[in-house]
Length: 207
Image (cartoon, rainbow, N blue to C red; front, top):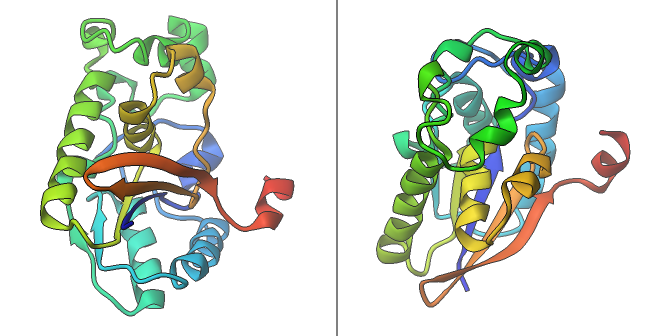
C-alpha cells in the first residue's frame, strides 16, 4: 500500500520564542531544527519517495531543501499546504493571546467559522477542506506512489481529523512535533492512520 507522509517543518525561531508568525512573516529554521530535519530525512531514505509537495512558507521550504538534498530529488510548492492564516494575531505570543482573549486555540478547533472571524483567522473547517482536497487528488493522480508533504501543525492536525472523529479538546492537546512524520496508508483510495509523531527514538526522551 502506498504511503502519504506529512512532515512538520523543523524547529524555527518562532517556535522557540512562542510567537505566532502565520504565513507571511519570515521565521527561519534554527540550527537545532536543521538537525531535526536531517535526522528525520534518514528515515525517509528507507523507502522510495516519489513526490514531495511543500508549503510555500520559508520554514517549510528550508525543511524541504534539507530533505530533498539528502534524498537526491526535487520538490513542488503547493499552496494547499499553507500555514493557517492568523490575521490580527500575527506577532503575538501564545501566552499573551490567552491572557488577553482567552483560549482562542481551543475555540479554533470547534470548527465554528464565525468564532475567530473578528481576528481574521482561517477556520479549521477551511484547513480541513484544502487538506482533504489534496489527499483526494493524491488518491487519483498518485495511486501507487509514496508522497511526502511538508507542512505545518494545523494542516497536519486537519489531515488526522479527516480520518478520526476527534473532539476539539483532543485536537487542542494533540501536539505534532517539529520534523516529525504523520503517516497515512492509501489502501484502495481509503486512508488509514499508520503513525503520528514518528521520529528518532532519542527525541522522545529529550524533547
